[in-house]
Image 1 (cartoon, helix red, strand yellow):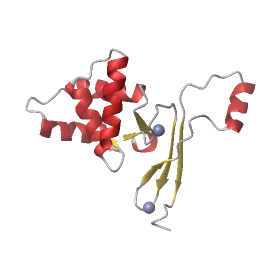
Image 2: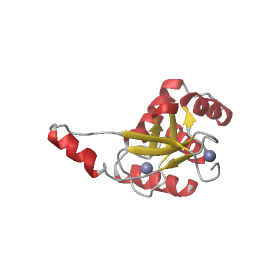
Image 3: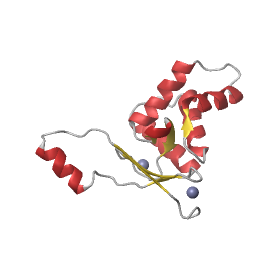
Image 4: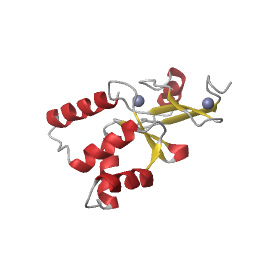
Length: 143
Ligand SMILES: [Zn+2]
Ligand SMILES: [Zn+2]
Protein backbone atom coordinates (compact mmCIF):
# COMPACT_ATOMS: atom_id res chain seq x y z
CA UNK A 1 0.00 0.00 0.00
CA UNK A 2 2.90 2.27 0.83
CA UNK A 3 4.30 2.10 -2.68
CA UNK A 4 0.88 2.25 -4.24
CA UNK A 5 0.10 5.66 -2.77
CA UNK A 6 3.51 6.98 -3.84
CA UNK A 7 3.08 5.66 -7.35
CA UNK A 8 -0.30 7.34 -7.46
CA UNK A 9 1.31 10.57 -6.21
CA UNK A 10 3.98 10.51 -8.90
CA UNK A 11 1.34 10.00 -11.57
CA UNK A 12 -0.95 12.65 -10.10
CA UNK A 13 1.79 15.29 -9.95
CA UNK A 14 2.94 14.46 -13.44
CA UNK A 15 -0.53 14.69 -14.94
CA UNK A 16 -1.48 17.87 -13.11
CA UNK A 17 1.80 19.75 -13.40
CA UNK A 18 2.50 19.74 -9.68
CA UNK A 19 6.05 19.43 -8.53
CA UNK A 20 6.75 16.40 -6.41
CA UNK A 21 9.23 18.22 -4.19
CA UNK A 22 11.33 16.32 -1.72
CA UNK A 23 9.36 17.62 1.32
CA UNK A 24 6.10 16.63 -0.37
CA UNK A 25 7.39 13.18 -1.13
CA UNK A 26 8.86 12.63 2.33
CA UNK A 27 5.72 13.85 4.06
CA UNK A 28 3.58 11.44 2.06
CA UNK A 29 6.02 8.59 2.74
CA UNK A 30 5.92 9.23 6.46
CA UNK A 31 2.12 9.50 6.63
CA UNK A 32 1.58 6.43 4.46
CA UNK A 33 3.98 4.29 6.46
CA UNK A 34 2.49 5.22 9.81
CA UNK A 35 0.19 2.61 11.32
CA UNK A 36 -1.78 5.19 13.25
CA UNK A 37 -2.83 8.74 12.40
CA UNK A 38 0.18 10.96 12.75
CA UNK A 39 0.31 14.53 14.03
CA UNK A 40 2.14 17.35 12.27
CA UNK A 41 4.81 17.64 14.95
CA UNK A 42 5.50 13.90 14.72
CA UNK A 43 5.94 14.28 10.97
CA UNK A 44 8.36 17.14 11.62
CA UNK A 45 10.31 15.02 14.06
CA UNK A 46 10.63 12.13 11.63
CA UNK A 47 11.62 14.47 8.83
CA UNK A 48 14.45 15.94 10.84
CA UNK A 49 15.87 12.40 10.97
CA UNK A 50 16.01 12.02 7.19
CA UNK A 51 17.02 15.53 6.14
CA UNK A 52 20.42 16.95 6.91
CA UNK A 53 19.08 20.42 6.48
CA UNK A 54 16.00 20.37 8.64
CA UNK A 55 13.07 21.75 6.61
CA UNK A 56 11.22 24.67 8.13
CA UNK A 57 7.83 23.89 9.69
CA UNK A 58 5.88 26.05 7.17
CA UNK A 59 7.33 23.97 4.32
CA UNK A 60 6.08 20.84 6.01
CA UNK A 61 2.66 22.28 6.80
CA UNK A 62 2.31 23.29 3.16
CA UNK A 63 3.28 19.78 2.08
CA UNK A 64 0.69 18.28 4.44
CA UNK A 65 -1.93 20.72 3.12
CA UNK A 66 -1.05 19.82 -0.42
CA UNK A 67 -1.81 16.11 0.06
CA UNK A 68 -4.82 16.88 2.20
CA UNK A 69 -6.35 19.25 -0.34
CA UNK A 70 -5.84 16.64 -3.08
CA UNK A 71 -7.43 13.93 -0.92
CA UNK A 72 -4.39 11.67 -0.67
CA UNK A 73 -4.57 11.91 3.08
CA UNK A 74 -7.44 12.50 5.49
CA UNK A 75 -7.44 14.45 8.69
CA UNK A 76 -8.75 12.75 11.82
CA UNK A 77 -10.17 15.87 13.42
CA UNK A 78 -10.54 14.59 16.96
CA UNK A 79 -6.87 13.64 17.03
CA UNK A 80 -5.58 16.51 14.93
CA UNK A 81 -3.69 13.91 12.94
CA UNK A 82 -3.36 12.66 9.39
CA UNK A 83 -3.95 9.27 7.87
CA UNK A 84 -3.49 8.03 4.29
CA UNK A 85 -6.59 7.26 2.27
CA UNK A 86 -6.97 3.49 2.01
CA UNK A 87 -8.66 3.66 -1.33
CA UNK A 88 -7.12 3.76 -4.71
CA UNK A 89 -9.06 6.79 -5.86
CA UNK A 90 -9.21 10.30 -4.54
CA UNK A 91 -12.42 11.12 -2.76
CA UNK A 92 -13.63 13.94 -0.59
CA UNK A 93 -14.74 13.59 2.97
CA UNK A 94 -13.35 11.42 5.68
CA UNK A 95 -15.07 8.83 7.76
CA UNK A 96 -13.27 6.95 10.43
CA UNK A 97 -14.08 4.31 12.99
CA UNK A 98 -11.86 4.86 16.00
CA UNK A 99 -11.34 2.18 18.65
CA UNK A 100 -11.54 3.56 22.19
CA UNK A 101 -9.47 0.69 23.48
CA UNK A 102 -6.43 0.32 21.23
CA UNK A 103 -6.68 3.52 19.22
CA UNK A 104 -6.94 1.67 15.92
CA UNK A 105 -8.38 3.82 13.17
CA UNK A 106 -10.26 2.26 10.28
CA UNK A 107 -11.43 4.23 7.31
CA UNK A 108 -15.13 3.65 6.76
CA UNK A 109 -14.87 5.06 3.28
CA UNK A 110 -18.06 6.20 1.69
CA UNK A 111 -17.28 8.09 -1.50
CA UNK A 112 -20.30 10.21 -1.02
CA UNK A 113 -22.38 11.65 1.76
CA UNK A 114 -25.03 9.25 3.02
CA UNK A 115 -28.40 9.82 1.34
CA UNK A 116 -30.18 11.14 4.43
CA UNK A 117 -27.51 13.74 5.04
CA UNK A 118 -27.67 14.78 1.39
CA UNK A 119 -31.43 15.23 1.68
CA UNK A 120 -30.97 17.45 4.65
CA UNK A 121 -28.29 19.62 3.00
CA UNK A 122 -30.44 19.86 -0.15
CA UNK A 123 -33.45 21.00 1.83
CA UNK A 124 -31.44 23.79 3.35
CA UNK A 125 -29.84 24.70 0.02
CA UNK A 126 -26.46 24.03 1.54
CA UNK A 127 -23.54 22.89 -0.61
CA UNK A 128 -21.34 20.48 1.33
CA UNK A 129 -17.67 20.77 0.43
CA UNK A 130 -15.97 18.77 3.11
CA UNK A 131 -17.13 16.55 5.87
CA UNK A 132 -15.71 14.52 8.62
CA UNK A 133 -17.42 11.68 10.38
CA UNK A 134 -15.89 9.89 13.31
CA UNK A 135 -17.45 6.86 14.91
CA UNK A 136 -16.05 5.87 18.28
CA UNK A 137 -16.34 2.33 19.55
CA UNK A 138 -14.55 -0.98 19.85
CA UNK A 139 -12.68 -2.72 17.05
CA UNK A 140 -12.87 -6.45 16.35
CA UNK A 141 -9.68 -7.14 18.32
CA UNK A 142 -10.88 -5.36 21.41
CA UNK A 143 -14.41 -6.75 21.66
ZN1 LIG B 1 -10.19 7.81 1.91
ZN1 LIG C 1 -9.20 -1.89 19.29
